[in-house]
Amino acid sequence: MTKRTLSQLDVAGKTVLVRVDFNVPIEQGVEATANYDQRLRATLPTIEYLLERRCKVVLCSHLGRPAGQIDEGLRLAPVGERLSVLLNRPVISLADCIGTDVAAAVGGMSEGDIYLLENLRFHPGEEKNDDSFSRDLASLADCFVMDAFAVAHRAHASTVGLPNLLPSTMGLLTQREVESLGLALAEPERPLAALMGGAKVSDKILVLENLLSRLDHLFIGGGMAVTFLAATGKPVGASPVEEDRLEFARDVLRRADRNGVAVHLPDDVVAADKFAPEPDSVATLAVSDVPDGWYIMDVGAETAGRYAATLAACKTILWNGPMGVFEMDKFKAGTRAVADSIAGLPDATTVVGGGSTAEAVESLGLMERMTHVSTGGGASLEFLEGRELPGIAALPDA
Image 1: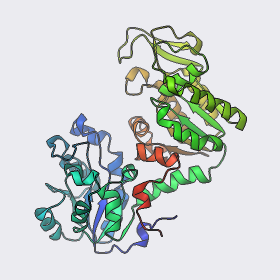
Image 2: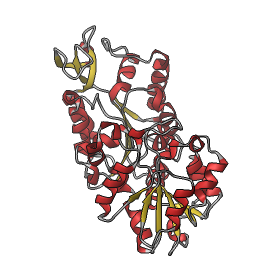
Image 3: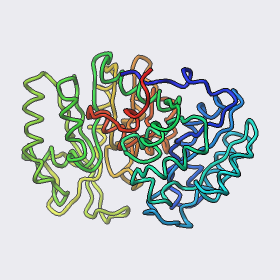
Image 4: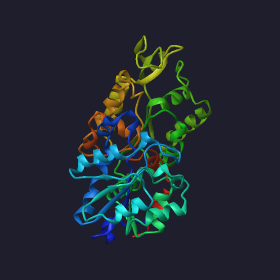
């Protein structure tokens, strides 16, 4: 079903409650809000659309996992300050998200004002999808805009409760996410490639199940590659192997071969004698030469080059998961090489999953050169798995 879009809801002059996802790495310090503000920038078009229509804009989000209690380190005011810089206009942060003081503040808003409610997860009713909490939020506004794709896979009060209480619609960010991911799955230009990395095969099982029959190429990197290499009999040293996923990996390889899907595994890897940012020894080795006790940390330069050459001929690329232990500086090269190779391909649609993949692309300064970088890690994965996202399903059809 096609869901209602923002242009199909009359919001002119109204008080609009917007569910955004401002769950940024605040635990790394306030400066991290500026370094990793993709989720803030991604929702600017929706906010600006509403401001152009003289709306009173009330933003709501969670931050971290405060478990239904107030956590002073997880207040949203620093995020509001960064948003104010991005918008070049004031953003007023409130001390709570419900209650008489909040209702009075919102009731006194003028057209063009932007208020940011306090962390939704300070209240247990948010994650419990409590009807009373949903109603308290709904009482603040005339209509609701769902622009937090990154939490659309969560059935919480602010994602599935509010659409049942207010005239509702997708925001521009959520619309772009659904359209970009949906088009890549339903009508991709071929060849279609999936570039899969990250720590575990188990995290990507349902994605592989949903995508395998559709693909022309499957590239494996990151910790996933360790289990696939072990499944083919290659030595992986002390690298953690998902023993319970070895047969699944073999089955993927068999099915891919039957279906004519080319599976690309590393030929060389960067290995270290310790799983640490500064190991004593680091070497680039053929996959058949990984010593006992060593750890595979990244794909090697030859593998990255081979991946890049084949990806350059693909027309649609779905990427989810770094090629190595990207958070350690010594092991970024494989991810950087692959990202550089697909960024700005003139004839390709490049769709990057959220979470660590989006952070990698953002830190490399390549965001603007990808067709679409998702704001949702878990949500984009579940979408690619073919699952219905509750926060999207709850919205009215067009």
